[in-house]
Length: 216
Length: 216
Image (cartoon, rainbow over all chains, first blue to last red; front, side, top):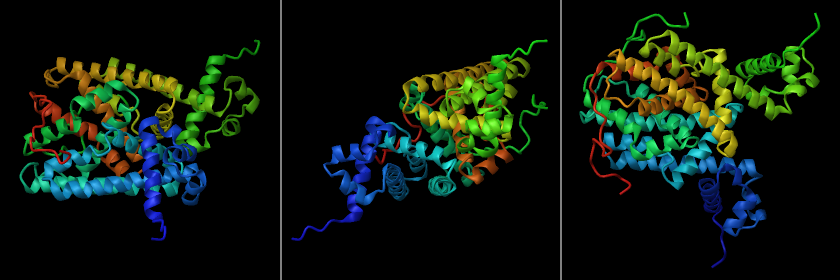
C-alpha cells in the first residue's frame, strides 16, 4: 500500500495534541515545539499544516468548536429537553481535562476577538450556534411540559450560556468557584427553579423593585 | 507656591486617561504613546510612573479595581439590599463607556492571569471582594424579608457574579447579547425569581431531573 497521508485527519490529530497540552499545561505551553515533542512529528511537518504558533492556536480553537458542535448534535439527538439542556450548558465547563482545554482556548480567543473584527465574527458564530442548540433544548423541554411555555427560549438561552461561561471563567481563576461547580451545577439549580414554577412571568423592563436608582 | 507634584494623584490621572482610551478604542490602542498624545504629558513623564506598556495596563487594572471597590462601598452604604444587589452586579456590565473600559481591562487580565500565578492571585482577590459585597447585599435583603433566608448568600454570590461577568463578556463579542443587556438586566430577572418565591429549597446535589446522563 502506498503511504497516503490524510491531511485533514493529520491536521485534526495535531490540534488534538495541542488541546491535550492546553489541558495539562495551559495556553502558555502550547507551542509548535511542544506539539512536536509530544507527537513525534517534526516541527517541519507541523509547519506544513500551520504557519506558526498563532495559526496553530487558531486550529485548536476550530477543533474545539468542532468537538462542541458534534457533542451538541449528539446530546440533542439522544436526550430529552431538560437533560440535553443541562449537558449542553456543561459542555465547556472545565470539570475534566478535555473541557478544561476547551474553556482555556475559548477564553483566550474571546479576549483576542475583542481587538480583531474577523476573529470576533468567528467567535460570535460559535456563541450563536451554542445558543441555538440551547434554545432547541428549551423548546423540547417546553413541548414535554418540563418548562413553562411563557419562557422566551432565545432570551433564556443568552442568560444560561452567560451563566455557564462566566462561572467557568471564574473557576479558572478561583478555586472556590471550581469547588462550587464540582459540588453542584449552578445551571441545574437555576433550571430547577424555572422547571418548578410552571408559569413564571417575564417581568416588564421596569424593575420589580421600583425604588429610585443610586445612579440618579 | 512651589510646583509640588502629587505622584499618587498623577499616577491615577494617567490610569484614568488609559481607561478612557480602553473605553473608546479598546485594549489594542492602550499604549504609552497614546496616553501621552491624549494627556499632554510626555512619554518620559509617563515612563517615570510605569515601566512599559504591560506595567501601564496593570496600573489600569488596579485603578479599575479601585473604582469598583469605591462604588461597591457607596452602594452598600446608601441602598437597601435588593437595590444594592442589582447595582453591585451591574458595576462592570458594559452599558456605558466607563463600564466598557472596566469590562475590557478585567477580561484582558482574566486571561493573562490564567498563565501567571502572581497575577491570578491578584485577580482572584478582586473577584473575592466583589462576591463579598454581593453576599453582604444578599444578607441585607434577607434581613429585610426581600429574599428568602434559605438562600446561601455566599454560594448565590458566586452564581450571580458569574452570570453578570459571563453576559458582559458575551456582550463584548455579540451585539445581540448587548441588546439584551440594554433592554433588561438578566440579573434583575433572576433576582425577581428569587425574590418572588420566598422559600426556594436548594436542590440536593443529585439532579432534580434524575434520568441517566448521556456521559454514562
